[in-house]
Amino acid sequence: MSDLLSIGYSGLKAYSRALSTVGDNIANAQTPGYARRRLELMEALAGGDTTLTRSSIRPGGVEIRGIDRSVDAWLIEDSRISFGGAERSATRLDWMNKVEGALSDDTNGIKTGLTKLFTTADLLTADPSNQTLRTQFLQAADDVASGFRTAAGQLSDMAEGVSGAATSEVDQFNTNLQALEEINIGLRKARPGSSNEASLLDERDRLLDRLSAQGGVKASFDERGAVTLRVSGSGDLLVGGGVVTPIAVTTAADGRLSLTVGGGAPFTTTTGSLAGLAEAANHIADQRAGLDAMATQFANQLNTAHQGGLDATGNPGAALFTGTGGAASLTVAPLTANQVAAGNATSVNGNMLAFGALRGANDPEARWSGHLATQAQATASARAQDAAAATRADASAAARDSVSQVDLDKEAAELLRFQQAYQAAARTIQVARETMQTLLNSI
Image (cartoon, rainbow, N blue to C red; front, side, top):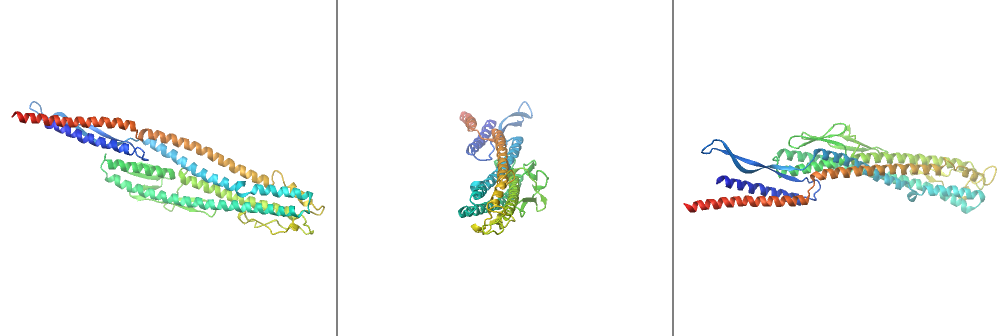
């Protein structure tokens, strides 16, 4: 009779815990990073002597082995790799779109200004003394200089924005490293198979997901689930053995980023948002250098052309532009309409005819259009890479979720099953009680 009671009691205890586990699954069905839990049950065997045999084994009910998380280590690792790639491409594309916007004619008007400058020069060939056209020529030059300054200012602001974003990302990365070590401490103290251990493992995986999305890391685990985290490329230790090694970022004068581990070894990563920010910083630095080179070349070319002519009073033409050291300092010279060098030694419109002859395969208009086309191609390539990386990340996440995600239909079936098992265990205790009461009443 005592065996019947113990069997019923073990069933009530086990199935109550199973119902609680199902309830946790249902309550956390939409919780990011929550892995479905399953209560592992096993048969409890009771051994003892009987009248006819010794050391016999009899059914002893059910025992709780522990809580098991529905996870697949390979799918988790694959999803982290693919998500890191997606974060890298998305971060890089975001800043490349901004660069394309800063260089577009809608933002700076450089292309429109160049076209207006050469068009006005063509008109001056027919009417070189026209004061309105001379003023428009100077205004077009000023528009071009202003456009270069606008583009340079926006690219400079972007460089600062990338640097600030990288600093914030590094701070969050280091915070996640510290949190991961706290989880390691908790896992070493947690009772194996407990709900507390499962919750800690969920949080550990969430932190590893975030860290993998930020930079290239590689994780290994001990028998308690505590993690040792290293830089995937160099193998430098980030978390492990009670040690947390933070990373740092420095910004060069041109805006390029350098990441280090512990203030020394380079933190080289080809994946994650930090890699995307580093690539964006490099691209912006290249664009700033290219813009400065084009502004200087443009100013020198047009200054030389203008200085080769004569103004309305017969004096040699002055420089059209000053501050030719880069795009940010490019300004138009304070000339009057009469100082426009429309003529030359042979005719009153000869220099404007020479201006028109500048148009060709290597003129400022063509070079600027080619520069914009190169940027557009680079952005289009980044957009295609981002689409491919996002598709891969979605597929790997779906594969991971197919194992770990909570299925409410399945949980409903489990809930019904364990309710019936609980009722059966309760009925077992009731039968034992009634049998015992019948025996006592018969005495």
